[in-house]
Length: 175
Image 1 (cartoon, rainbow, N blue to C red):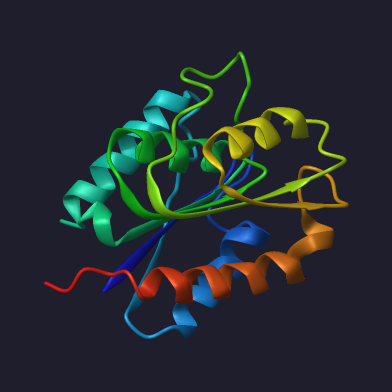
Image 2: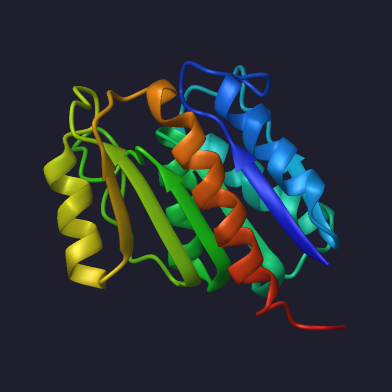
């Protein structure tokens, strides 16, 4: 069984368009369980980080069989967890990487599979810092003609996410 943790951004919530759309893709796959995180009321990145780790622990999930997917601050959370211990996959949408306002802003992503989608017109998270992280670690990166919300690229995101989950599912460790 592969668990997919879906993390929303700073000013978003569990009902956000991208989170719900990603959940729908994960639900279509056999042996794949989506878990939508709820960080509302948690303004500090470290508080959200601890909440994600506590949720994973309370469910007794092995990070070796977890995909962490997130948008913006949720992408940073996914990357930050993977920097502590290797995960099965990281699927990052406009991740908050390279920002001085976030602690450990350029985590070394430790995932068997990683894919990043970022907008060329993102005025919240500069593309350059994300491109640099992908270059340094030789991570899969798709740049799209979109802004930070990536709403114009939803079809591309969902197509890539489905392919990504199928790729990850071939690496799940049986119990």
